[in-house]
Length: 170
Picture 1 (tube, rainbow, N blue to C red):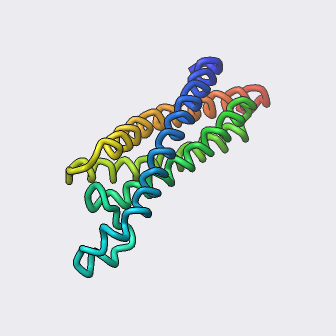
Picture 2 (cartoon, rainbow, N blue to C red; picture 1 turned 90 degrees about the horizontal axis):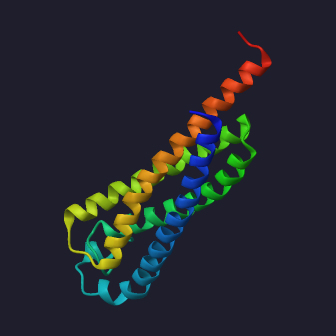
């Protein structure tokens, strides 16, 4: 892929991911706040093992607690990666692109973990519309993060090839 193509694709995907991760972070933060405020009265009627479960949410199903927490974690890390990735792609040299590629891969792994929990929550069923929105946004952002990681890795390959050609390595 040409240098300009992968650079512009990486820019567009990083800006898109920044917006998507922001939406995921806002919805997950709302869900955590809502869960903290309502869990005391909702958990008081449960039997003893469920009452002492530390990640109980008064809405959704039993996968909701882990899903919301990992979505919040993936959203915050994804926003940081997108901001740092924009700076690194703007520099467009090999060390900065390697840093962007590594952080993008770590963020994609966290997003895939949250996506797996979203799929489990969909499989169990019974949730409200805010959780459905969070599930859909998590699944979409996992796909866009994959494409962004691929575009950054294509830029790494291009920059490494240009660097080796300019140095004169055989």
